[in-house]
Image (spheres, rainbow, N blue to C red):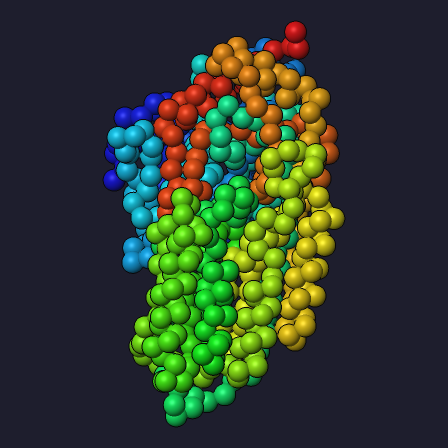
Length: 489
């Protein structure tokens, strides 16, 4: 399995990536991989330790004569986002990732997320640690846990543990770019027990399905006009209210940090309205495809008879209030940055929505380059859903990363990039949650940058990596490590 990875260059990096592909590692299930890396470190005589949360730190002494060089920390997260195409059976806690290399030079997985985010960064750090032909100062590789499910590893990282001066976050996704700032974020969790009423004799039960969306990363893809299955299905449910539809159940999205690709609802409505409701859904499908032309034109919206046991539907008023709140909830880009043109400042993703036996739950992820704006948008969501009697928790907040455009580390990276690749690196701020903001709060003396190979479709089964960019990333990383071991010119 994945033998073709053994033929790619740089071989040390791809060999480690194969290990990551073949070791299941969704958020919360990184223990087997961490143990495997500890055994690898033992075999190479590298010191390692774990903090109370389980984060792994591997150390390598400096090359003789470079002991006084500033310490360099490589940082990445061990977990990956578990997303699979509908109808593709895959147990992310047990099954390995099966990769395939296309003729177009992109590496993908078969029906699932690839785990290039952040597997390639972890693989690169491991390959640097085992390289015996590099001159380097003291090295540390920090591998955090549960980044994708709420930054748990970074938030709970041990203090006074890291000793390096420079931190290289290897969790970015665009060749030719270097990131010096990122958004912070917080989870908004909404829960409510809503009133239900038995089916009436004249009601039929139908299933409303929305599928075929591309999905994507709820930060870096939020501005691309992609469909959000929860927002679109709620729109369809609102259209069905004119036929006296009552909501019985709902299931949309699987992760709060992934744009939901599919959503399903079961509704009850009068038998006499069935045909008109189906015609309405068909017309709305055409409208949505037209609106999403060029980005999500494979959308499918259908209404058909529901099969199996069905929950008792909400009352008409509870249906109306819930759908009104979901329809009014902020979703997508809230504001663009004035300081960093072209970058989203504030957004919200309606990531996971469910209704079962009258119990409603919503998991949303608010992001912003401004911590004050994160708090404000989260509070707006709280205020909205409290109007329908829901309980709202705002939790797992993490700060943004304030740019340091004049740092010595950035200057050296830009020089090395120009010398090795013959082009200027574009300095960027990203609307996504890198761990740098949290790490900077715990270790305020660190200088940090983030860079990596080109990855597209992260957090979706369309995730892919440009193989050529990985070799370029490796060349740049090696050159930077050697440069940082030398005195400033």
